[in-house]
Length: 198
Image 1: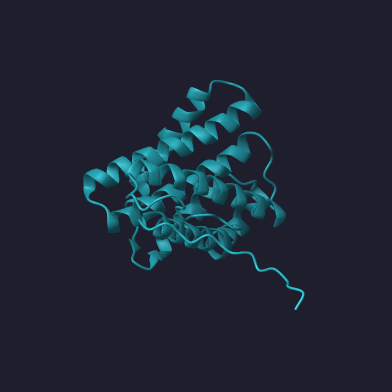
Image 2: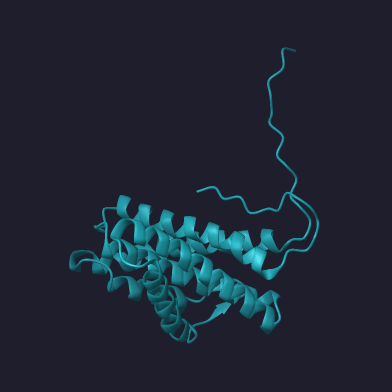
């Protein structure tokens, strides 16, 4: 999965809200990609409640990872603004998609996500996320949470799918995106190589 994570406009330092807004879009794409990959790997994830339960757990995991990365770079108050904005933007995107597919109030869907995020935040707080990424227990907790989402026949196998494939790839993308977004200098536009007649 390719993601764009550089600023291309000016060298003005971006606010925590701007960075969180850009990251929210990327995190949504990463979560959606993990869902597609898991379904391609022959896990049954039915459209509807189960589909959004999977997305909720994976997006919560990614927000927790982003918050730990922000801890390395931001003072406490700025980090709070960043993570709050990120959580709300991701929640809005999920709620809008959930509302379109399942009906009910978008506000209710958003609140359900925020409630789950707050619950899981306390649980993930028990696990280490260092300079080299999440500790074993941090990633394993995602796999444990996914057991509640999957059908019984997939419960055993989803642990390996999350720990060996989906979580490491997703965290790598979040780490890279945040490194790029926190840079103040804009990225250089790519030049297209063209063939010549020489």
